[in-house]
Image (cartoon, rainbow, N blue to C red; front, top):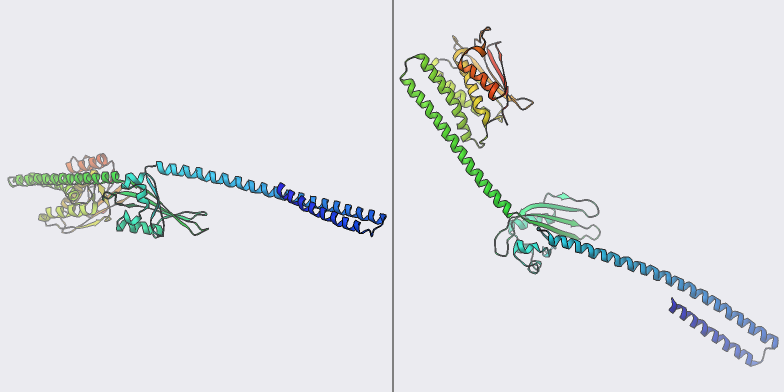
Length: 431
């Protein structure tokens, strides 16, 4: 401002000197009289004063404009310096965070896949120095499969979460196996974030990689342990089934030396009960699950065995099994349920069709709304007498049915004598 004011006054002074020289030339000519000379000098003085006033005002206005401009520039410079300082502080904070976390943070060029940044933890993960790594590309540390996954993530071809706002972004998390400097593969979980800037079309690729080698080794060890336990449990069920089969065989040998029909019948009943338990362990041994068995498969096996056991009686009733294919029962409830079914089906085969050449037995099961199993065993035989109190009959079979269903299975049982005999039970089937 001061410099411009000085230039203005110099120009004004030069103009004034020029006017004075011009006035001197006029006076020296002698053409003007005293009055004319006075008027001429007066007019030149007024003109010079006006020029001084105009020049001063112009210079003052320019000085004020320059002052305002300098003030604006100074404020812009101060704001810029503050912004740059804030950016440097923010960069230092984020770099400190990136350098402090155990996960490896990296960025790559989306076109060449060359590393543009890698946090210090990359040295521990891959064995390369930061200088070595920033001179490398993803192709140098990833195998073909891992590189393909990363390319798809950067290209947006993987199913990913979407960002919102002014900087749309996508991210994808997957497992990669980078190859370290020593040539060993490293199990990692990597999240790739792709940020696309709509203002200038730039794309930023940021990755966060976590070493999960210990977790993978623990999972492999756990799988091996589970596999060993599954084999052990299968062997236990197999041996239990074999031991129960030995009991059945011993009972069969005992029956060869017996001639009393009541004893032979009791032995056969015991064999059927043991067989019902052995079937549970046999299906568990064959099943993929060691905790539950399929109800329909078990019923088919049990009915086939019982039908074969009673073929000698000359009766071959029709047996209808109405059970969903996906209905299962937990191992803890399978054995008591099998014993109950064995007793009720055996009773129908032995007593329901006395004096008849045919008959029908229906076995149905399903899930109730509360998750309990509903089981029904029905026959169209002669039925039970109205005055028959099955709870106080004194027979081992029905007493065992009541004890198992109401005690061990914590369920309920009902008897319907209309059109034959129908037993309806509800109980827990899964833990």
